[in-house]
Image (cartoon, rainbow, N blue to C red; front, side, top):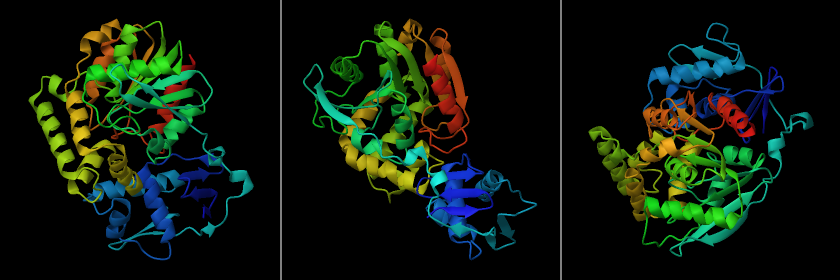
Length: 395
């Protein structure tokens, strides 16, 4: 049930906080912390309680916890002096002290996002070597083709806690076309060729099957290289190019010993903890992609692994990604390009985003204040991310 208190409404199921009818952005961990405090408002909550509930028992510094408490207070219009909502109990913990009413959602608070999800159409096409590629199409606006990043599952992603807000936002504005890369999702899993050249062929096959002449392309992480390659080869067909968390050089192509070592460490974590949400390796892996993620979102990373592909295929794909190098193609991209990159991305360094934006002619570069590789709905950078994207695609 949603919680009503002092001109606020917090809905745990929809992960929404409103103040006087206006939405308030919260990082996922801050949202979870606030929900926990409200649900346990009859008692003082210790720091250990919060760490167990919000961080799933992971090691968290006092400064990190204090910063999340301060962020929750700020979102409510509170502060450490007034403590009208969240009171600090010295040497004991915290307590939510504002009176709360639990109620059904009033009609005037019903969000458009509560409407049933639009239906995707799933189809299949074949790449040049006969590999079956699963495609999902939804929406009715200008076409936007999202290239397949490292791990995808067109059905699972559509309702996942990490991807759903972004994918549904895109589908409200575009004819969104996505596909699963070879070896993953609903595409053929048992494939002989996993390489950048094969990724290129799969993208071309999806374009041909979609029967679209001119369209925007979205490339996230490793998929950015495929998007860059296609835009360089077919500028007449690409209307806009959007790159998020992108890299032009895989870890083994960056001329850095530390990056090559990171590649091996990454592969070792995959071998040891693939699909096991209780594995220490899995938690370390997830914390690299979404360090600010909620327990639900961390669990999603493990779930995604289990449903998407085998550990063997994941390793083969990662090896292919680590060998990517499309730097020579960057000056050849002659389409309007927006490059977005999280400042503290722990998977792809900001320097890779800068390299791409500084080498593609007239590209626009936007730095997002986040430490996540997969940007999450509700974190402070989220509104700017959507605003920049919408403005660029509408130009």
